[in-house]
Image (cartoon, one colour):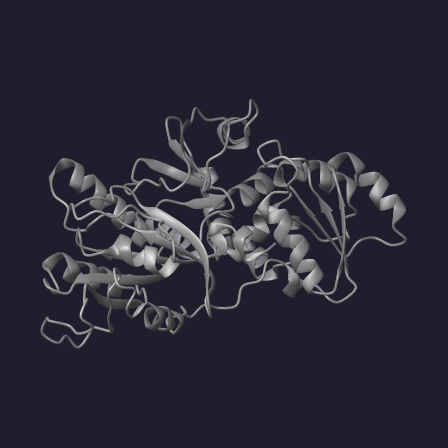
Length: 401
């Protein structure tokens, strides 16, 4: 996978914020060296977030996000500001763009407050310094003076952004669980929702991690599990399967072989696994009339037997024997008010960056709404949750507590 193919969930999100007509769009165009966003002297030209994927060293693959002005007014303006606030939930690095003539406004001050509250590394840039100097009074927080129109200070801005690498704990999908020469069997049904000729992202990540661990990967469909095992001289060291065929895989794979799912590994990769294990315990408290939110981080064409809208509601109803209500959300849409829900079931979040996933977890926790994920829920409903967590003894201890 080259940098241009890096999915949005694996890119650092750099959001450009500020008032209308501060030059956010012009600045992104200057950084990208192409016309990504529409530019106009009219206020409020940017009405929806605009994104540009590119490589920005030393950060690597990034996603630049142009946002509507934070000082927008009126009914439509309020909706645009709301969308900008939503972008803040997934922003890894923020750039506050000021109009050099106006300086810092009350809207800019509010943005700075949000950056600090959300612990987002940020940079303040005064745009429209067309003569190379700032006409506004000096500000101790101002980092750079640039001119997007004249392409002045853009390289310095890129260098400054490169110094704002968010401090993250190293993340691994599966390679930290493997030894060199370990054999991993990957059971990967052909997902009808995936683009033709491609594996879905968690499957791609698993294969890449296995290779980086100097381990061995054997890939088959669920119809070839027995054939794959017969061809091997010894049992695999680990089996990873799609959550939807957990039950079939568990029946075919010897109990002595660790078995987990792509969804469970993705939840771990996004920092969501422990919370998902806690959340699944709430199934015993569901009652008639309770509403369950099923949320996915991507949007795709719904198949007739879609997992989120068909299979999980069916399995949950069958397991609980309750008359439950189900609602769904997908893509960037996630309800701010979660009080109506008694459980949230989230996908693995492969298309969401870690900050967005952690934000959704925090929303649920702050409103005291249990939240689990597809892989954990399906394993629990099929009675194999303990087995699917054998790689993580501390989580099994949590289940027994």
